[in-house]
Length: 140
Image (cartoon, rainbow, N blue to C red):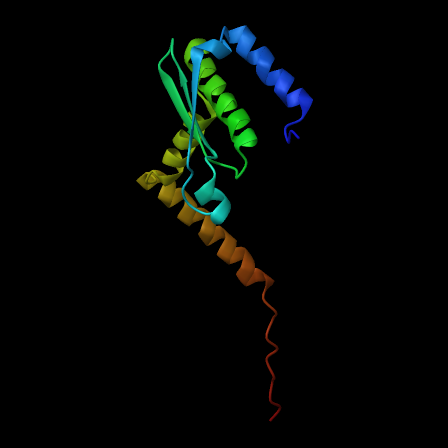
């Protein structure tokens, strides 16, 4: 019983063929997973370790509790890594790391001043929305 659809498996096989990755070049080992999962994780070797001999790339996957799913995921991770190296493009993981780094970077003084100016304008708008207090005029 396979939990991965045929389309996904075929897509992965095509990508492997396109990149010249052969199954005989991949060393596969199964290791006991760690972390959550209880008795199932402690008894079964569900963690998958792959090593692509020509490139020396190594991948370890223990995302799921089932070994068959982890085998597929590990191969997909390996193909993504090799593809990013061969094609010279930044991997999705690298792009995410750079995005987080940019978000954490401290703002420049000019950017801070711009934000403060915008906040001041917004507060003025909100003050104008406030209800008008009626002033009682006393008649003497």
